[in-house]
Length: 230
Image (tube, rainbow, N blue to C red; front, side, top):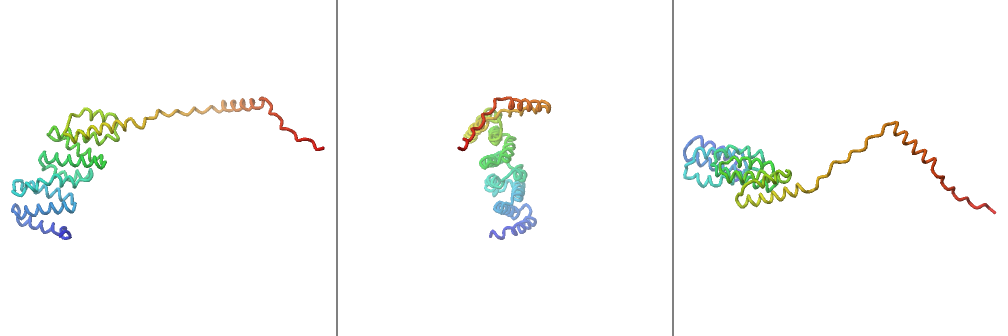
């Protein structure tokens, strides 16, 4: 039952210690990985899954277990720090598995506006030995900068070669978004500098001249007098 799964880890740990290398250890690892996934215990999930892949890579039970790990891992990564936390599991994945995970993480991060995570996943994807994965990584990395970057982002996206249909659609959308952001709102010119203050003596002279003009100007008409009483 779900309420007993926190305590189940201790029992599975004991089973692994009592039967190292045998079926009890393998079964315990598989169950612990699943429990950690359900409870969103990210660090434990990554550590135990990596341990299973290192210890039982050729087990007849490994293929179905391994096939679901990339998507399960991608679902656990919800931020830049989380990606670093699961690095141990990424290191034991095959190149294809690693590309699948990072691709999923980058796409989801772009969808929720997490630019930092998208760029981190894209940077790792760009280290792949697969040319298509590297190209997608470059597209994701630039797309994450489309909203806040300058015209150089659109230039970079334009230079990236063709990729799969999904990445190509993202590339074109990111180019259009970046161009709109770069063109609007129009950048205001430099603000006009305020005139320098007048020297004290010049200010006094100008004030005296203004006063003289006021005194020497045409006289104001006198107000009409009230009629004399009869």
